Image 1 (spheres, rainbow, N blue to C red):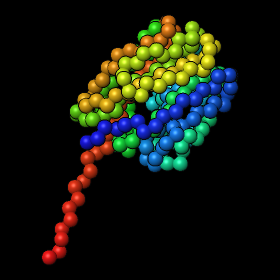
Image 2: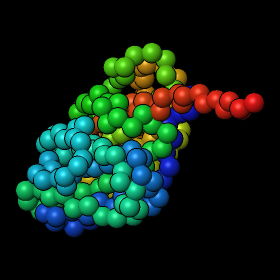
Image 3: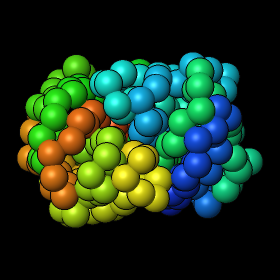
Image 4: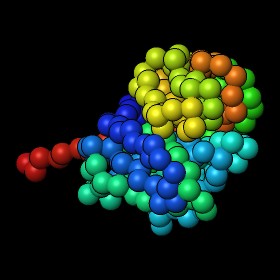
Length: 221
């Protein structure tokens, strides 16, 4: 059984206050890839989001909104832009991922999320509900207020270390990392940011594709 892996990624920002935001999707997307968006908004939830996306998290934590959405790719979305809205003008930061070799069932994408305030956003322990010691992709994700210009400087996982901030102390920042690990439960450890601030974070599991059926060729004699 192969691990799900990140095929491609992208980052984008709205560095000035807007109500209609522009999130850029990964540069290379194949039909049936899993698309995941991790976003932070400056003090607001997403009020509207384009059709077809499944909300895993959309938390209001005072000066920061933190959200994660997932979708099964059609295959024609390479580097395209989607435009969710906030109720009033805010800045936002975004990371997008395209993931291959996953189960194909959006219900197999799960997360456990938390909010708090300090300089070490701590994605909580998460156990995949399907159980068993499968070859899963694990994502640790966070979004934070940037009132002290405190973007991500260290990550709990070594792979796909991605971050984006909205350019200055009046905005927000987001960080993502991953690992391919066999097991049912992960508690990734902490991100490091510049100083104490409001944050939201999460640990996400992505199930692998099922083992393929065996095919046999019988020659006629």
